[in-house]
Length: 92
Image (cartoon, rainbow, N blue to C red; front, side, top):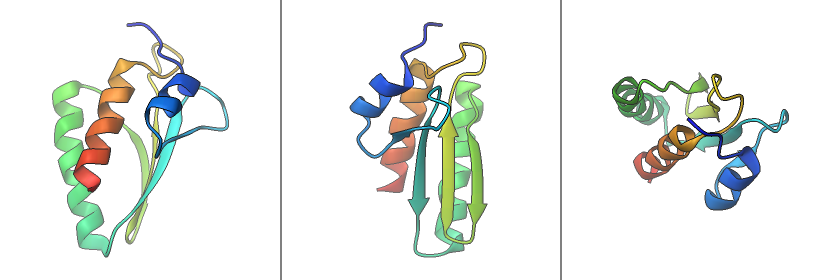
């Protein structure tokens, strides 16, 4: 698994930003209410299990903060790009 790089990933994913450590991408999702946020997390969790690639995330009420990186590679990989794109699609 080759590293794609956080900077390159953020250029391809305009709603995502490079994390402070430079080795991950981040995004905050905001929904109408907790139920919508939890539904988003449920759909993403099902995909994460299929991909065997799990996000770091934090939820408070209608907000979900996500960080994506591939720990084995020490940077952002194609798996993170695929997961970020899936999250963007689900959030629409």
